[in-house]
Length: 134
Length: 398
Image 1 (cartoon, each protein chain N blue to C red):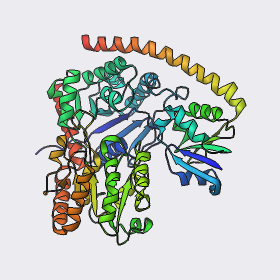
Image 2: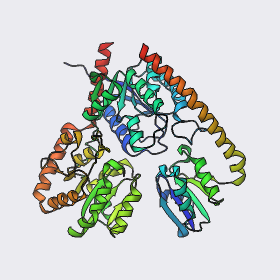
Image 3: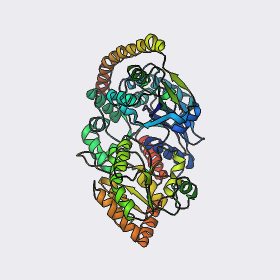
């Protein structure tokens, strides 16, 4: 049994573009916002013994939160999952890539985000003052 | 004789919306750009993702950073600077007359682009993002968000809002002079949405031939009231023989809606299409016998929106049941162009649809008037004429 978590887009197009076998595929439509609720996602992924879990979207190039999806696949112990789109592009889960590339990049993003919050607080505060005083 | 001004407009969409080309803001932009083209103006469109626009549009893609894709607020900060650089190149290469920016949270690039290029800056403001985050989402970095909004509204030469209610709210919240804010509710392409569309393929596709079809199109979000239609479904489908419900759209409430329909054991009589291309929406609305718009208030505040579906419904020349909250009372009037629903009442949806089902003359009368209103008052070309007038006023002041 496989699970396709459809975030956005057309399930048929994703299935066809990625040549998925429909016979044992369960499709669940979820709003992208639900990705911020780990409990909900992990419960869904563990509700049955899925051998594969896919996240489906319109176009991976424009899809946010891909690292979070990989983290959910890792935590659910489904290490064969993938992120798929309507154009047949896929971002497959690979344990080595996850540990040595995606997680370090995620930590880098966290650090960078923290710095950006500090920098932009100063910058926007200054811009507001500058424009108001003109 | 008045000389017709032909303009070169630069649209700028900054929000991160992925690859989603359909739905609210996408529909707004397509409508405006089509109307610009129809009236002989030129348009350049810069956006963070793909758009479904007329082929005459000079489209420029300005993507978000690939590294920052996991924290929705933060990814906006550097986009202000990276998109600004690209926008300045676009301005240099295309020499537009003005730019038109759809307001988005944590964005202040409009003010910077105006400062760097001197171009007239028209800001489309369809909600106070601080309010939206606080009431409908999660508010992080509230001060930063407010400062960004303040910068944009201060620096814009003119602000277009979609309702009188929003004009009042924005004016009070950000101390914006009333004369700077101009109300222009959303509109519709009255050529695409019309009463003469053949719906046979949609009826066949969903097995709706010979059925009485109750229709809804739009977001499955809180204020659209789609959950009320789901609650009304059981009784409607029982009391009206051979009836079906066609829900066109998708959104956060879909799970809730499907849950209600399953509990009431009517899921098999309700078709939920999910998101469909904008070009397919008219065919789907044409397949309906009555259209429903049960808009709700925004928590404790007065409704400030201007749902595009209301104008599309009217342009289709179909009988409508709708709430008339806030400025919607200028769109819908009882037994003139719609039957008015009580606020937040699924019982009212049942009563009013049943009333229309039993009274074909009334249905016909309000449908004809709705179409007439759409053509005369709600076409996107009216919005574009207003933008052109605003441009002229801005230039006269300079």
